[in-house]
Length: 222
Image 1 (spheres, one colour):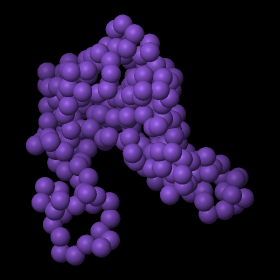
Image 2 (cartoon, rainbow, N blue to C red; image 1 turned 135 degrees about the vertical axis):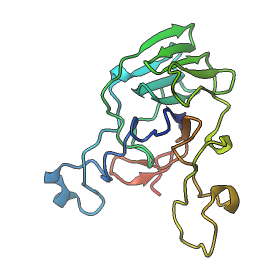
Image 3 (cartoon, rainbow, N blue to C red; image 1 turned 90 degrees about the vertical axis):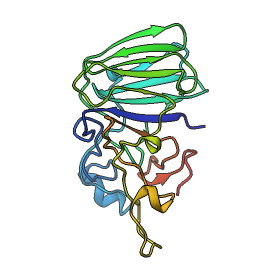
């Protein structure tokens, strides 16, 4: 079973300038010399690495939670009931997790918790699934729009979120593009918010398999 996976940004208005990147438009991981040999399944544009630097990751003592500090404002959070079973494949939302390691301090809290301090935020995780009681993040920057977040807060409930748009307009006709009006399940909430934070739940998004093709959480080709 795939782990519960959150990617959360705590930022001053603009998250995309301070976090995990797509690695350009590249959709594949082949070397140039391999492209002709592999055929159309590989999509070679720009290099990326979906596996974060191990120095940026923190795993709780019980092996059920992993935190990847991608920047002082950008944290990837994973929880699994099966110890040390985490997701390193590139997802449709995030392919390039190999980022420069920011300075941070991590302190284990018993067998299942951890406290992580960056220059921008203080994260406290007490163990268990991500809930309002189990994980809280506080801002260390008084000038930031971000004041705090907990595991019970979703971007879909954030009144400051500037919203997103459809993944596709196929099959639509004269429909509002306002996510609060159209009730279309494909309408995504955005990564920019006046509240200073945004959350992407990446648990069920398609991932690349070993042949650089989309697969579901169980590895079945889509």
